Length: 195
Image 1: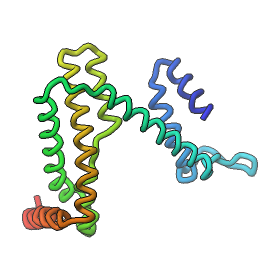
Image 2 (image 1 turned 90 degrees about the horizontal axis):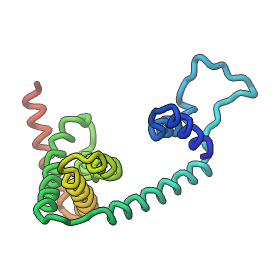
Image 3 (image 1 turned 180 degrees about the vertical axis):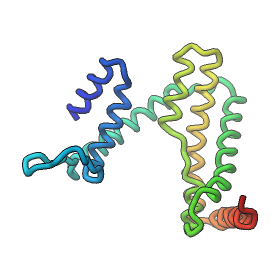
């Protein structure tokens, strides 16, 4: 963890993005056993260091705390300034979920079980990345930046709520049959009209 802060500080002082450097460092350290470093010859004393289960658990807990505090921050930042903007956010969220069905049908392998395809269609909550990016126009002083931020926060909120409801409905009710029917129709039309 200390080395992550060192990497962040060095890269940031050089004028580059410390957050991206920390992301790449984390990706590399967690996958070091899978990455082949052909230029480096390992001896008995020089072996790649990998995170053990205790360290992975520690980072998982830190990630959970950061996400929790970030969602609290988003909740505090969310201001319902306009019912129209809130309604538009709901419509955008419904459109995303409606478009997700043909997108899943087009992109998943044909041998994917329909139950898995159904879950792919409903598990699409928007979250931290969208909320962070939505605050940039407001910080830059762009006209309408507050509307962009509030609309994005509304989409994040509605997508999380809708995902939670749809997962329950797909698992416990007949909504799964409706999704399977729609996915089947899109798959048949793709197979019938390959382009």
